[in-house]
Length: 363
Image (tube, rainbow, N blue to C red; front, side, top):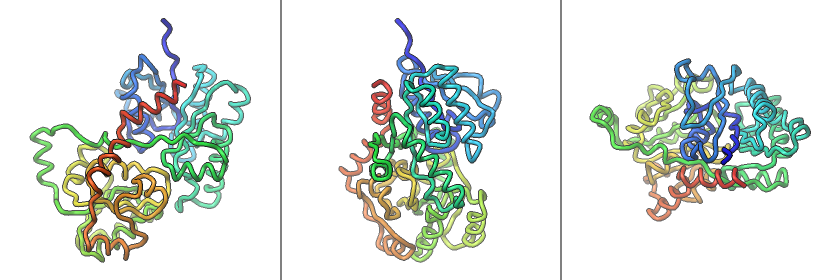
């Protein structure tokens, strides 16, 4: 009996997840797909993992550590190097690519290795983000074009994002969502219970990268206007925008601004103590933090855009500015109906999502 051929996973910082949504997706695929049935090769950023962490496989799947950074401009070369290794050295039949940083090399690879199946999860039209300069947006548009035009299969994690790709590129993406039940933790130890009991209660919670398109200031202003407590977890020190907001609102009554918390155990007390979740993302397809929040609360206020409405199937409450958010919060957020919430949670379970990916990879 011959063993299954390994499928390279390209475009993440690596596994276990240390950064964001793509890394969590790669980790969950490794955890849910048996390496004996479908082995993965995960390309990782060497500097993201200590020497003692780089010696073993992850959940039975092989890891290859590259010397280049997997974020920013360097990701274009990290991903291209991984693709070259996957196609020529590993002789892969198909490659699963997260994002389109390395898409500039896809036209060449497709000419040289036309039989390889290039599967690209396109993320969320990154060029729309306000944080990028005009040259950066043009580059991101070009990379997106390369991915959309040369990929064998395009994956979108959101129906609204898929609609945009159909309209813009006239191709038919496969829609596979992002999961959130990995944030539901098992029974805690006595030490964890002590931390949990010490956490504050009765606050609204927001978790996001601190960027203008995530409506960070809108959320803060809405909570101040409504007179409700807010805990906002994000990377406040990462850029001038975050530092300015921290300086402006760090001492505001009822506003708690916390630095990033990356482990689920650290987030759990803040989630459990929250009376509702506020989500300000305006671009990016399915935002992981919104899906994850579904597993911790039924009261959700989201910025009103097609991506968020598609993710929640229109459930929950929506705002467009600080004033409309304040109105929602003063009145109290209406919980999502139990049956609707159960359906949404079933949609975003990793076992179901991994099964869909497995079906795609085994075609």
